[in-house]
Image 1 (cartoon, one colour):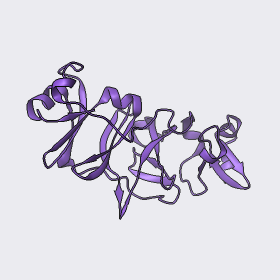
Image 2 (cartoon, one colour):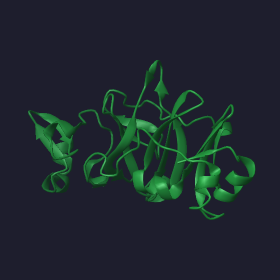
Image 3 (tube, one colour):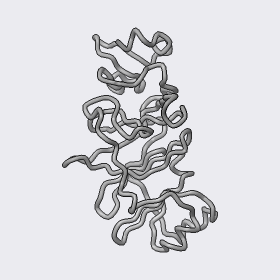
Image 4 (cartoon, helix red, strand yellow):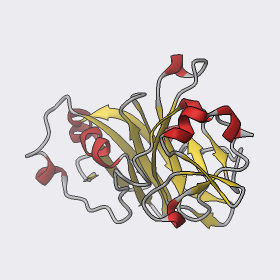
Length: 209
């Protein structure tokens, strides 16, 4: 049982045994905690526990034109850019560091852009699984495994619809109703990790977060 394996985690209040249900602290209110009875990760390898969305995910992002955005960015500033059909969306790593997750729509397809500064992991993911669209955000935790990504910490995400937890370093859900569901990146031909100069040169009609 996870409770017996992680006395140190219990002391700092991360793990809660609520009516014999194992939960992970998620915030000041009890209904913010994450149910983790089927979690496969090791409790002692979690870090932080700031509470869900201590870095608030964006769910209604606003954009400006290349001309407007050019006032703020230097040629080598790093961006994630996604494109489909005639639509191009650009997300500065600097902005993603503040929010970590941006829920968006690209040419009618629900997507989210995410960046973890600890693992230096930036990617564009789909938000559609079957016939359902999910909203992603950060849980307030990071997790490491010495055998994954050379032991780097990586953020733990959650989805608002099922409250499953997801670990992008292994690209799957690790607890909750969607456990073992792959975390699906957008097709590689539709996005890239690039810089501001490249976006200006190639996508003069892009919308910039």
